[in-house]
Image (cartoon, rainbow, N blue to C red; front, side, top):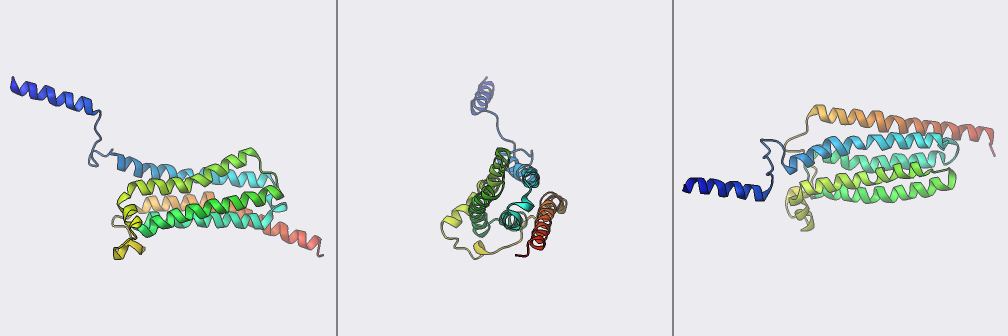
Length: 217
């Protein structure tokens, strides 16, 4: 009878506590879910608005309006977003990498404001394109926020000034991501970001040269 009472009490306590999270061995705790969403959700989401934004630039005839100058800003923003991504995927997360992510997100936002200010003076920036920009601006912040939550111990070290020797060094991960995943991300970046925006820059440069040839003055 005493054993049954203990068993009933245990079941009551489990019910009051709600559903428990499985351990990493059962594979669905909060940390692993966040990590998977960051790797397989946030990262691929970058490709969709990037291609959509390229389509908007093409439709608004960027090569004959804002031209090379705006296309160069797009390349700059890709670099600002890409560097912390490469660091986060390949290097150990420490105060240096977290600072790089946070700083790059702020600089990316400032460059995006510069980009829109330039574009609206030269070409039509439709509401759809502005909405696409909002996704592109928030994704670096989202990636930085998820990484921060996953590595809160390193955030504390950064806030304390990072007193350990390895806090401000780029070091390889203890457990590197799989070559298949890194290859897939690299292929996606090349296909959906580098290739379209390289084509945009080529169009802008070509149009600029044609304009200079037609109007040498």
